[in-house]
Amino acid sequence: MADAAGRTEPVIFRETLALYDLDDPGDLFPRFVQAQAEGYRDRVQEMRRRGRTLPGAREALESLAGLDGVVQTVLTGNPRSSAETKLEAFQLAGRLDLESGAYGTDDPVRSNLVAIAQRRAGRRHGRRFGRATTIVIGDTTRDVEAALTGGARIIAVASGRATAQELRDAGAPIVLTSLEDTATLTRGIIAS
Image (cartoon, rainbow, N blue to C red):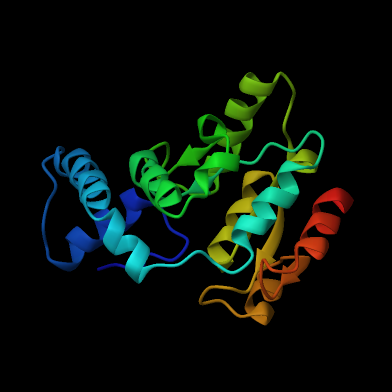
């Protein structure tokens, strides 16, 4: 499979097909999205057994939900149906406005998802979201790049494959070692 970290599902799918010299007659990706979503829904219990919520994720969502004017959503390379199933499986969807989010099926270019989420959130909440009012919290160098080139600020968390130094080198001005430091995360959002 093609490298998936910080990338959109259409890009991963296309590159995976290329690895096997396969052509897409045009209907494979929509069929894949549907099959993937069904597979996730059918395997929620297995996801819960094998997966995990990052330490501090739930507490961070709760803490940020208490900040006036904060809209929490997702910007992910996953198709919406798969993202929702994952979030619900780990009981994280409740504090997120998923209608304001942007998903891999909205655009294959990750940085373009920032503007999509900003427009959706703006329509839903009756205000403008721009670079000064949009913060992406991500854990890959591609998340940092997408935020900075897409028109948002970034708070990076060294909880994935990228080290804190790699995230700083990619341009993240704030890098946390985990989401457990909700006080620093909250201060970073308020300061931004």
